[in-house]
Image 1: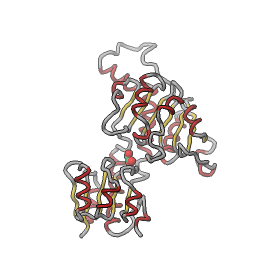
Image 2: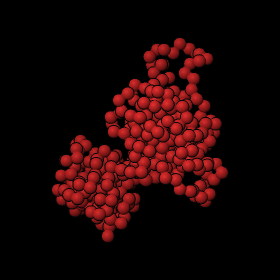
Image 3: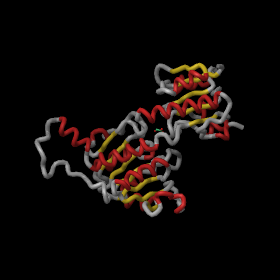
Image 4: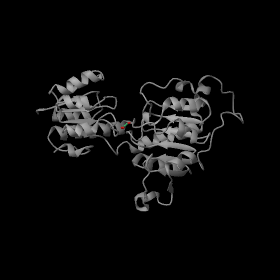
Length: 329
Ligand code: GLV
């Protein structure tokens, strides 16, 4: 029972229960700022820190940290400098797999919601402006027959492709933009003959809906900037359920305002929880508060995986979902 866990923000069961069975658990009453978290990590009081996406775990913090590991309550880990963690011998865990379908559901929801103008429609009804069926009321776009371009072809992109094919969309993908790599027929698996790989430039130009499914890193930051937005079709719709900084949000606001593209469905923002000035006022957007994985069962599974990762690290093993197993020399 010598293990000690720091949890920066309370997570659902069975997470806290699993941690409590394995050691002492400290749950912070409110999310820590950078300096407080850095001091707690440097204190030597904790074996493992269970973090959230908003906890910035950078090289400076890691250089001072006296912990064995960081267990991130997320599949993405762009908040952690994994290279620096590895150099410091600090293991990092994440929660892959369990949130794939839920996040793809949100991508599909944003595709449908932008195409059929759900926010404008809901607002109209609530504001008492629905005066009965009208031939020209809130006309939207067809999803069936439209081209869905997937930037990335990992788990969440594939789950989105599965849904889109069910809706009769034509699905194209660029596997790991902005640098492309060929995907073999074998790798395509169930999608062979159903989806087609194109270069990133062509994806940008041909998509009616361009949906982002790449991790945030130095290659993908601002992958969708003013130049890319200009190359999209004027009636194209951008969907982002990945990470905000993949899109230059101020450029997106300009593009949406000036008809460079038609609409955007966003679950993530460049500087969460802040929005780029003007974004919230645009009617041609559907904006969600980063809820891709927000279902009761998925959050419970994320809690379970992040706790299992934390317990394994505290007990001296490589966690079941290690981002950097090589950190344990
Ligand atoms: C959420 O954005 C995650 O990475 O799990």
